[in-house]
Structure formats: C-alpha cells, structure tokens
Amino acid sequence: MGKRFTAGLIIVVVLVIALVAPYIKNEYLTARYGDQFEELYKQTTMIERVDYLKVMEYTPTHAKICYVTKGENINVIEFSKIGSDDWQISAWRCMWSSTGSAGEFMYPFYF
Image (cartoon, rainbow, N blue to C red):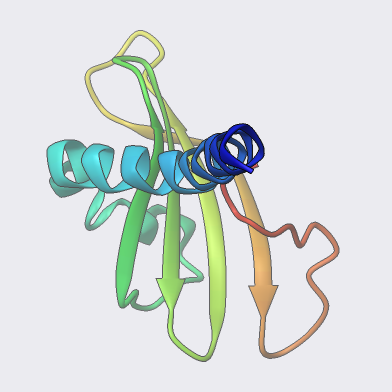
C-alpha cells in the first residue's frame, strides 16, 4: 500500500500543478504588466468598459490580454509593437458573449 499511495499522491500533485500553473503565470503577468493595458481595449471602439483584465502572454513586442465584462463578454486582444513604442491591436477574438454566438469559445482560456 505504501508504494501505491506514494505513486498516486505524486500523480495527483503533478496534475494539480499542471492545472494551477497557468493561472499563477497569468496572475504574475497581470500584476507586473497589467497597468500598461488598462485602457488599450478602447482601441476596438466597440468595447465600452471592462471589469477586469488578465495578461495571458507578454514579451517586449507582443502581448495577449483577456478583457472581461461581467455578464456581457470576454474578449482576448493581442497587441504588438511594430516599429513603435505604442501597443497596437494585432488580433481580437470574442471568446464569449451574452448577446450571441462566440464560435471560438475555449475553456480553460489559457490554451
């Protein structure tokens, strides 16, 4: 029983780490870089407000930000710096919307 219990415990710990690690990464990136992106969703001219954002990916020239408006929509917007110091939208996907279909829906969002 001792070896089976230890092997089972190791498997459970590895699975928990694999499921939690992306969320920890997103929280770290949001705390470190989130301020840069608080108002950039306005470049879309279609999103009026957001309740919060999460930084999903960040490099000095590319970022993927998840903007959430509770009860309305979830948008993932990618920003790039191409020959400029300003972030510009390079891609935009509505992942979920209360007003219609979101064909690119995925869960969990970090995949």
